[in-house]
Amino acid sequence: MGRDVRRVPANWEHPRYTIEDAPDEPWVGSVRCLLADYPEAVARWDERAEKWPLVKDFRNGGWKPYEGEKQSFVDYAGPRPDPKNYMPVWPTDECTHLMMYETTTEGSPISPSFATPEELARWLTDNEASAFGNQLADYEFWLRVAGGATSVAMVTNGKLTSHAITTANIDNPK
Image 1: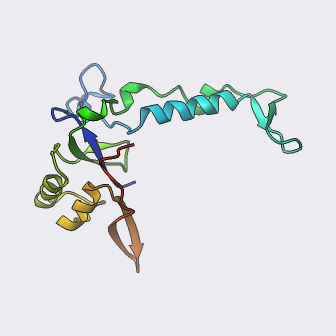
Image 2: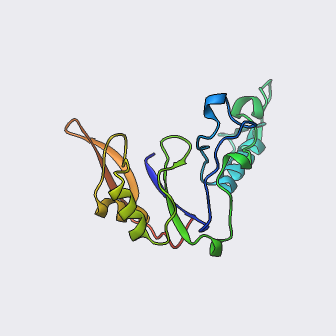
């Protein structure tokens, strides 16, 4: 949870609810939350669905068929992930810009897209973007996160703080 930089095309505009797909009328025009990794979510769901009729065989190792009644996997886990609830998957060479997302919910943008980590960090700092809850952050924090560091919230001595840790290479997106 926290903040996540995502690579997007230069002209990407995050979708908003329409009258056709909004959960309720007040939602029309508001930003739709989109999860980050559709291919991974589908692969994980498919793998779990395939193993659902099986149980771990601790005596012989591996898996064996479950004997008895069991609810369906869809009843247990819900339907297979729907691509409309996830960020689009673009070719890597089209993803030339960076956009900051909050990931405390499913994922909604907290910034426009920018061509460089420095531009994104400057915008987040100048616009007093939330690092977590009501916590603000300085340019160096945002630059680390825009460069691929992980944003985390920690409670230290009873005080909530935000930190950017575990650097990553944004040029090698998931």
